[in-house]
Image 1 (tube, rainbow, N blue to C red):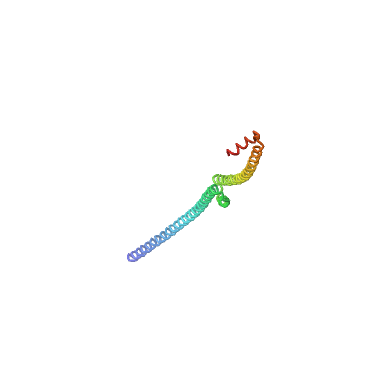
Image 2 (image 1 turned 90 degrees about the vertical axis):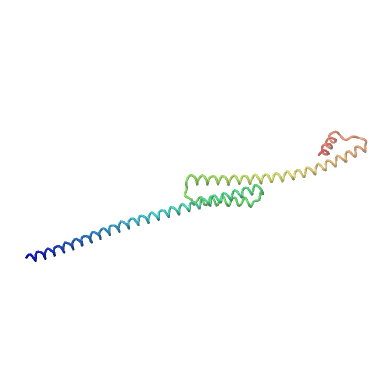
Length: 193
């Protein structure tokens, strides 16, 4: 029985060893699955954070592109304004109108806030004010043309008046008379320019 009891002890020891090894394997499997689950959750959270970052970066880049497009349009509008004021070519006024309308169109696409609304309002005022400048310039051109026309007509009338006074002077001298004082004064004024 001593032999059996040693055999039983050995078997019991082997069974306990197997149970211990099995417990270690089960604990390791549970721990590995827990670690994998945690790693997967962390990876999913990192992926989501990465996607969120990319979306925000893309939105920020798009907004930056819109802002740059507005700035370019405003810059081109200012160039057209300066060119118009220098050469008064209607083509430049049309370019200014196109660039300001483009900037306003881009601002419609951008998320509304106080700055974009202020900029849109300023651009609309700029566009209206430039329209007034064009209108005033056309009025000035019309007035200049009218003045030139009137001046030309006045020159012709003065020329005719001078001819009449010269003829009257000649007639008066032939008759032995002097020119009336008003005509003599007018002749002096015309002669002096």
